[in-house]
Image (cartoon, rainbow, N blue to C red; front, side, top):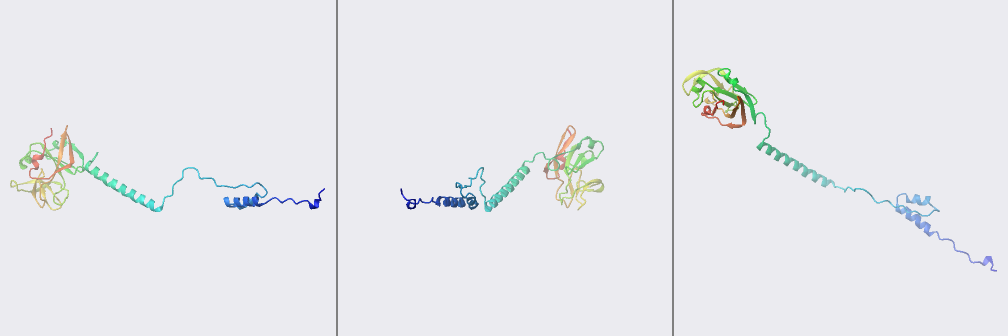
Length: 238
């Protein structure tokens, strides 16, 4: 029998694979070294980070954000300018001055001779020309009504009616009371808004007046420059 002392020694198992596995674990993921140490003597496990899932939002640089914000602001500003221009050229549902304003009924003027309506929303005087007012304002018809812009054409002061103010009418040389008299510089106008004394350069401007079923409306967007022919612009109430 062969001598046990002379029997060829069996080679020891190689440990290199275990060391290689531990090294792979240490390099594959954070904490890999600790996992490798804890798993000594066990089958080697390689930890791999999973791939991201879901919608990935691309990174946007600060420069790109500033460019987008700048052009967005410019677009909003241009849109606002265009919208304003369109609204000014084609106004919709305009009320108050700049649109159509209801100024009263005809019976308010016929209820008392010489009655006048001062409508502040329309910035207008509504005047019915009767009797001597027709005689003093050439071209007017008996009972006709005119809408006068209450702004003095000199410097824009609001012109009141002064029934107590008396002066000579240069058109006929007659002196009588009752004139539109500007409180700022004394410009004087007749019942029909005809200028008889400066420094105003012309007669009071007039509005378009519409009378329907006894109701009067003034279109304050339609202003006609005042002239001595103002009395002929007065209209009859139906």
